[in-house]
Length: 398
Image (cartoon, rainbow, N blue to C red; front, side, top):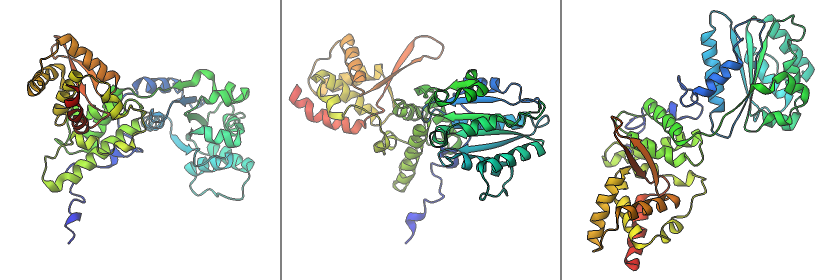
């Protein structure tokens, strides 16, 4: 009666779901080494007891700002274990959007029993000052999504935090990291900017396709059963999320594809994520892609024959080479009693398809460095759907 529950805990595809969570902090942060070094440079003097440091990190959604800061602080605590004790107070200002709530969250990080209510902002700051001085640890305060607090309460609390060591005779008790999607320095008062330091700004861009691939591959290695995914399928997932450049999206697509594959196991199918699994939840994408109809209908008849050849291979495989395209195009031409177009014309068709976002091309170096190979994939459309529409239209075009 409850056979449908047998899959729970079976782990056919997903061995450990934790690395597929957005909030998971990997032991090694991939594709952000340059910005790790930049952040470390801003904290170069943090091992000295009189030092306090500052950093402002900005970048679009899903660019890795929060995971960068969290891994840095974790690694810093380990690195300074025998030299300086580091405490971390990470406050998400979307959830604590007033000055009072921010200071309360900071106090709870170093004193979980500190009272929440009945204290003014001045009294809370006084408590924070006393706690940081009584405690020999150095406190790093991270104000994540700080723009939410700035819009609601202004930047006076930043000024107060930056002045907390003013009469400490050179002893540094608190460092500050601001994290935001926006360019927050533009909305801060001159006195705050002066203390934060304009040179402490670190701008992080969106991830590119190769970086998203590294993230997805790392999470797959950590979470999925060996043999249930290929590097080609991970590349397809990266290509699907590349137009947005959001690490959260590539992780979500990987998780969705793995779950889709897990569900199919009742059919005793091959336990490997397929192209269909990757496209299982295309409605989660908010990319402004051209429609399937617009992308196909403008193609001439022979371009459609080429596209049909591509779709037939990509129904089963996540990618193919241009050599594969030419061979399969010959088969399709024979099927439709058409003469093949030249190699140059074929390349023009492929370029047009890429411009129409029907396919994605990627060039890789052949092992040994002898020549390069062009690989094709179809990250934004389901090959089965495209093939069905092409087969319907092509008879009218020929």
